[in-house]
Amino acid sequence: MDLRDFIALCEKTGNLKRIRAEVDWDLEISHICKLVEEKSGPALLFENVKGYKSPVLTGAFGTTQRLAMILGKARSLHG
Image (cartoon, rainbow, N blue to C red; front, side, top):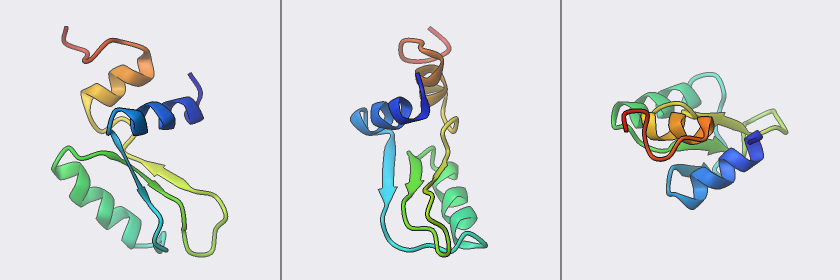
C-alpha cells in the first residue's frame, strides 16, 4: 500500500479529514493536530499550507485502527 492508497482508505473509512482552508505550518498545524490527537480524531490532510505547494498528512498512526490499516491488518492490532 502506498501513501495515496492509505489516504483513500482512511477517507473511505471515515479516518481522514481534509483541511482545505489555508493554514500556517509554523504554529497552526501543530496546534490543530494536538487537539485532534487528544480526542483520537481522524488523520488530517492539510491541502493548503501557506507558502508550500505540497499537502501535509498528520496523524497517520494516531490510532491503533489506522496503524493496523497501514500494516494490512483487519481492524486492530489486538484481535
